[in-house]
Length: 342
Image (tube, rainbow, N blue to C red):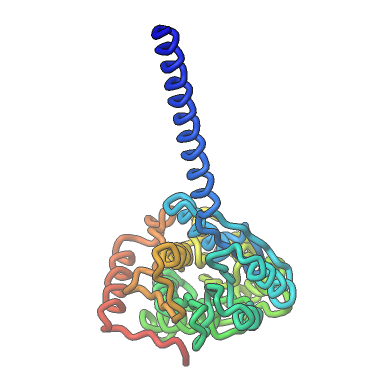
């Protein structure tokens, strides 16, 4: 009898032990699933031109991918054809869901759409790139001193021109795109005060995704003597590069490192570190430090710069590269002050 009771007791303890392990395992799995479900989620609406622009849309995605790898976030993305109604509808859809810790609007063309949606959802956190929205505590504005980075591009263009004529192709004639133009001109004239500067804009409803028009515009500048052309036109820039290649002149890229797109033709690219700014914003949300304010990234903040000229170092020459480093240092130190306006 005692033996039977002992065996029964041991069996009960065994079953309890197994049940406990099973429960613990299920609890761990449930906790893991909960952690996954509660991971910070971001929604992004890209600018017209979409992904594959080798410019600011791709840079935005790189920032989100970095946040995904380092912070464990997830994100949903959308590429609108219309920066107004379509973009606004998607921003509102994201906000209405309540699923997103942060919603990103890529590009100044979405300012009105974002203001409308952010006003409707004051508890939802938003970020807009390349535009300033003040007085809204739920909106962070990521802005850049494009004129400072473009100053370096202009200085290099002046060093490399043989015709003493340089050109600029912008997308839409908007304040942020004009800052590229104004900085570029200042940089070129810093090196060569008598240099001739020719600016042109693509315009139209698809200014940042119209390579054909950009090629025509760049061709017209080349016909007027420009032998170095800088662009700030998103995906339209591929047309500028094609014109430069066809005519045997130099081009300068923008936003992302575009040097490898046409090796030897593209002297350098003015890097605008949208990826860094986007990552920083996501991290602030993750750390509970989000602030609805205007952030400015310039050369001093390492938010801008030019590439290392991987494919053109020998063409440019070390002396010119050293001069560019010197000019950059003077801007950072405040010895050269680049104006964002004329």
